[in-house]
Image (cartoon, rainbow, N blue to C red; front, side, top):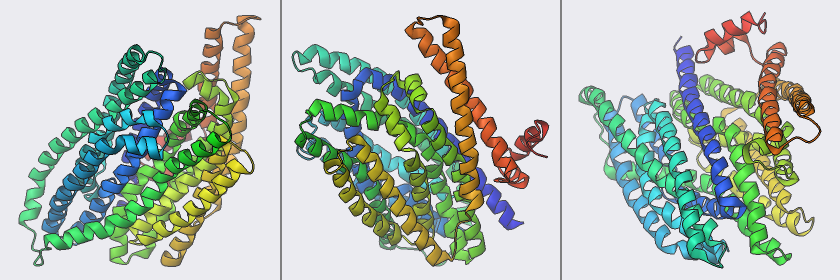
Length: 562
């Protein structure tokens, strides 16, 4: 009974964070549409460059603090050491202020050197300077999020993420529009000033939104502490950990995570640097290669992150839960958690990847009004990459939850070396242009998946179940993709046929939008039908999900369940 309740709570908490993250990503995707239109492909290249550098510097400083705090707090709470868990929070907070503050200042003063000398994109420095305070603010917010996650409460993190994205959406779009116009007015013959300052205005939303989210987390923490004081009073732990021991534990936990996530997040920056250098040598102008990479990063990457949100959301919930199971020596429960999270992720990620590939061009036209072949081609080429990155993200979190912190670092480092060699080969030898970036990233994710899977099998004596996790979702997604494409094609042509022989651009857009939305609705039903009929998910598993009983009742009513 305890295991069942534990599993249910674990799924509920993971789902809460996943749903909130999906909402946040959808908001992020929606505001990126007007932002992309305001900045243009050149401005989008500057915006993406600044964000990639910001992400790497965040990784170096304090991005991994939430996971480290979550793991350390969870381990101590599980042993009834409430005072030591609280001490972890205080030490982590001091650590975040120092590390976040130092990196934030260095980023501001060295932005020109980083963007100009290293990335070869000088105009991205405006956006990076605007982003620099967000590193300090995010560091503090991360400690609060990790503290709540260590208490197996994902709600504060979930709500703060939604608040963050809503604020970010408004401020980014308004800031980009205002500063773009200002840049054009002062730029004169320098046509890049508008996109450069517009990108800086877009990054302003990140700073403001993280600050608002931090205020929310502080309020929740003060309310939470009222209930937590009684546990602290009744804590009978005799051994009080010293500050130095906790700092050592934080650093020991954080370093492998930093290195692992740094490799993941340095990959896009390395990609862009290599891509820019090689294309410049092939005769492309700075504006041309910036625009091409802007399409990849500002359109494909934005859409790719929507299905990946489930893996990145389940990771914070699986680490403390898996850590507790490993401390207890309950390997059966640990295996169950790994199997459940992987299946849960694949059941959603695989159809998302197939759907994006099947409707690549229509979706690009709907979201970005871009009917060119390149954006759709990138989306179709990157379908497998989406699935593999979801698996690699989740398997990395599993190893971290098992306290095998060095394994993901080693595996990611091996994959990165092969990735860089493959990328140079694809760009120089085969002249694949931006598709070389997509294929090299697919190879990177595949190698990480393979090495992580071998490590999990070695330490947990566990092998992932294949048919229900991968094969049935893939078969169901194939039927879904065919159905979605057929429905889209039929409805789009019917609307245009009714509109006459020379349809207006507005009618073309409306026809595409209606066809895409109806195709997505049909796709969901087709996928659900085949997934259930092929026994990819059981009725009991549906009922175990949050609001699962209601969902199962609806499925029985429409004859999806027997």
